Image (cartoon, rainbow, N blue to C red; front, side, top):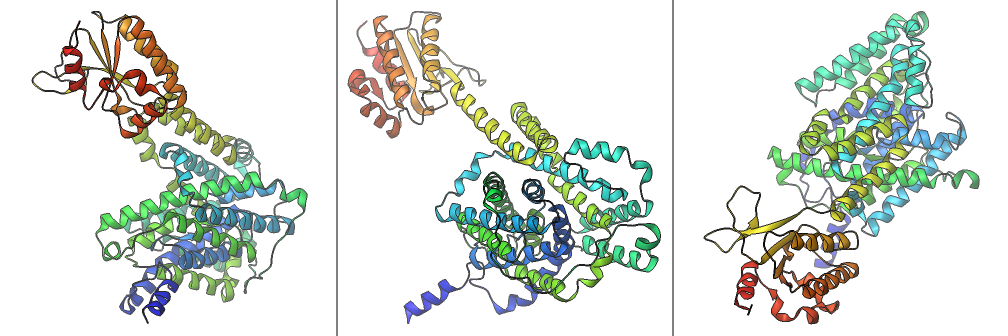
Length: 572
C-alpha cells in the first residue's frame, strides 16, 4: 500500500503536489491577469520573430503545459519571449527567407534543438553554467535587446515600411520616412502605451495590454481605419489545432544553426535562473500564503521543463520558448500556490487560438508595436545600471559594452563578447589580486590590514602578507615578485615572512613552484617563510607538492600570532 501511495505521489507534477481543492477558484482568477498580458504579448512576440500571430499562442500553450508537468517552480511562466525572439529571427533569417515555409520549418527545427540542449543541460545537472554571465553583463545584454526591440517597432508605430537589417540602418530608414507617418497609427500606439502604463502604475495585474488590444480592434472595425486611413493590421489569423509533425531542413541549413542554438540556449539558461530567483525572492518578500506553500525547487529540473516546452513548440510548428519575467511576476503577485494558474491561462489562450482568431484580423500592428516597446522598457533597467555604476565603474563598463554590441552589432555577437569580457575581467582580478601587509592591533592578538581605520603596529623583522586569491599560474610570478619587492623595500631588515593563507583557497602546480622558488630565494638572504591559517585544501596542496618537507612542520601555524611568537623565540 505504501509503495503504491509513493508511486502515485511521484506521478503528480512537482508544481501541483499538496494542492487543495479549495484553492481552485483562486487559481482560475489568478489565470485571468496572465491571459490579459500573455494574449497580446505572445502575438507581438510572434511578430518579433517574423512568424504568424498564432505561433505565439501555440508557443505559450506548449511552454506553459510542458513546464507545469516537468518543472518545479510553482510560479515560473514559460512561453514565447521577447528576449530570444529577435535572436531567433536574426539567426534563422540567415538560413531561410522570413515569411517563407522554409523559415517556419527552420524556426521549428531550432526550437527542437534548443529544447534538446536545455534538456541535456538539466539532465546532466549543468545549470551552473548560468553563472558565467554576471548580473551587470546580463543587465547590459537585456538593455541592448530592449534598444533593438524598440527601434524595430518605430516603423510600425509610424505606419511606414521598415525591415532594415541593423539598428543603425533602421534608424536611418525611419529618418527618411518620418514625413510619411500615419497619424492614426501613431495615435493608436500612444493610447495603447498610455493604457498599459496606467494599468501598471495602478496595479500591474490590471489588463492594460488586453484593454488596448480590444479597443484598438474596435476602433479599426468601427472607424474603418484600415480601408479609409491606411492603418496596417494583422490580417487573417488562421486558427484551429496545430499540426503535430517532425520538421526538417536540408543539411546545408542544419549545419548553420548550431551557433544560433548555443546562443539561445545560453540566454534561456541565464534568464530562467534570473527569473526563478526573482520569483522566489518576491514570494518571500510578500509573505503571502503562496510563499508559505512554496516547495523546494530544482533549477536543473526547471531547465528540463523549459526545454520540453521548446520541443513541444517545435513539433507543433511554433518556436523556442523561455521563462518570461513579466508573466512570472504577475503569477507570483497573484498569490497562486501552484502552476494551475499558468495551466488555466494556457487553456484560455488555446481556446482563443481555436475559436476566436477572427477578430484578430483587425488588430493594428501599431498596437503590437506599442506592446513590444513597453516590454522593452521593462528590459532596459535604468535603476539597475545606476546601481552598477555606483558600485564599480569597471563592471558598468562591461554592461555598457554588452549593451552597445547587442544593440548595434547583434545579439549573438553581444552575448559572445559579454562572456569573453566577463571571464577576462574575473581572470584579471585573480591574476593581479588585491593584497595587504598586515599589522598588529595593539592589545589584541589580531593582525589586520593597516588601511581599515584602526591603529596597527609592525613587529621589527617580521612581514605579514595576505593575498585575496588562489595561488595559480595566472598570478604565481606576480606573487613571487611582489613578496620579494616587499622584503627588499621594507623599512627595517626582514628575517621572517609570514604568509596569512586565509585568503588563498587553493594552490596549483605553478603556484607551488613559485612558492618553492621564493622560499629558496629568501633563505639565501637569511629570511624564513612561515605559513599561517592554511585551510585543509592548501595543506593538502603543500603536502602533495612536497613543500611541507621543505618548509618543515614547525613553519605551519594555526594563527598569525602563533607564527609571530614562534619566530620571536628562535635564536637570532
